[in-house]
Image 1 (cartoon, rainbow, N blue to C red):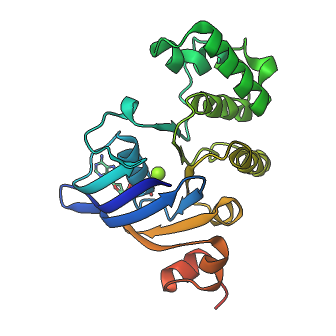
Image 2: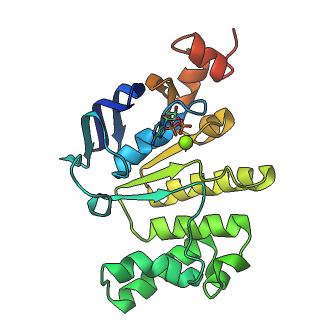
Image 3: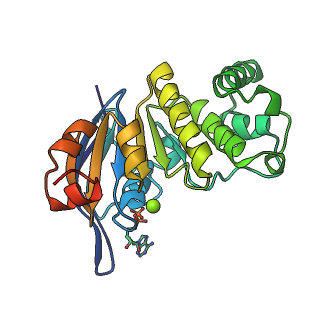
Length: 238
Ligand code: ADP
Ligand code: MG
């Protein structure tokens, strides 16, 4: 099944054309990494998929439904940002259940969902703590927990590890990868880090100046770069 289908998507701010006719089809279960230099339009693209920003032209389909006019909360997605945006006054448990609380999910069901996610992310001992009592890596896990309890069709990650130190980043990469394999999620993961892209993706979309330059599996991108930009950016052999 196609989880996400993007057609002729453009975005302009005044006279700056940030996205220039993007076409992208992502199958369910894929781990797609959107990689490109800072300012190439990655976050803009993700925000439009999430409904946090509007396209200037083109369509976005999630799970076979055109969502251009659907508000973020009614899209079957969950997003994890670079800044974790946890609610500081709430405990970890409350942070994770907040969305379910808003949707009036029965308490017993909430408990079950929290228990599952906490186990998966190994954050059971942290459920009673406040965000200020957590390390960066722990906060990141809680932010993922909040996304996981939604059980969405599509996970959107925007540079979720860039606030972490190098060692933790490598650990978390592996953890997210394992998570993807265990729950069979569909993930779009934005990064400017080529190594992250090569190690995590089932397919990589290399972006430059608002255009997807190549969309292929890591091996193909590395061995058969579509153009000079991709070759240079992905560090392919000459
Ligand atoms: P990336 O996430 O790849 O670093 P962004 O999608 O954040 O890139 O930004 C792409 C381009 O769009 C940049 O040149 C940025 O300055 C511009 N841009 C982003 N948001 C706005 C905005 N609200 N108004 C004007 N320009 C913006
Ligand atoms: Mg960005």
